[in-house]
Amino acid sequence: MKKGVIAGLGCFGITIIGIIVLALIVGGMMYKFNNTAVTFQEDAKTAWSNVESAYQRRNDLIGNLVKTVQGAADFEKSTLTEVIEARAKATQTTIDPTNITPEQLAQFQEAQQGLSGALSRLLVTVEKYPDLKANQNFIELQSQLEGTENRINVERNRYNDAVNVYNKHIKIFPNSFFAGILGFTEMTRYQADPGSEKAPEVEFDFGKKE
Image 1: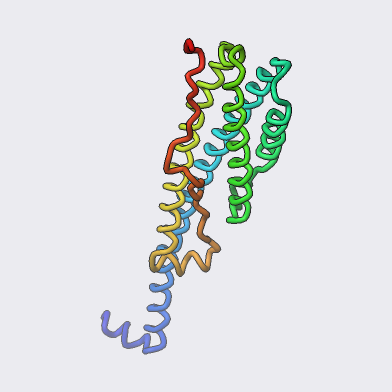
Image 2: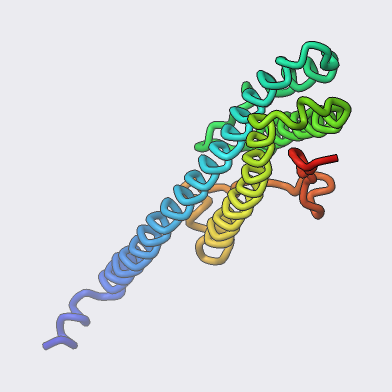
């Protein structure tokens, strides 16, 4: 009976059935790929949001630090102004997590590096002001900044890990074929800052007796 049915279909009918079966298989594979790619992509976007949150925490702490330093009437205004301007630029430079481009990420990193440099120069200048160094509020803010710098490094690494998982998923065959059809493209990694192989020094022995 089965042979008769198959014979009755003819070559054209068998071909059509084969195409339908193949389409169902490919469609199932594409559906599975899409769901996994979306999941990995959302994980990377969430990781980026955590990176921005860590940087925002640092910006807030630096804002409080600036207010404390402003209390020192004779503090070098040029150094303070540099930090204020760098902080404003870093705060204004944001990225849409749904469309992170290499250019946007480079601008974000440049703004954050500019703030890091200005902050380092501020902390070095503070060494000239013993009363400010001994200010309890300043000491606490400095300690919180140190912890925030560590948190930033952790969140950036987590973001890069999430991006690696997503990029690997869409690059392997046959996923790369499906990615092209469905519009999935590689996400940009956060590049290491110059000198990041050494942890930033934000410890100045504040509060210790000279």
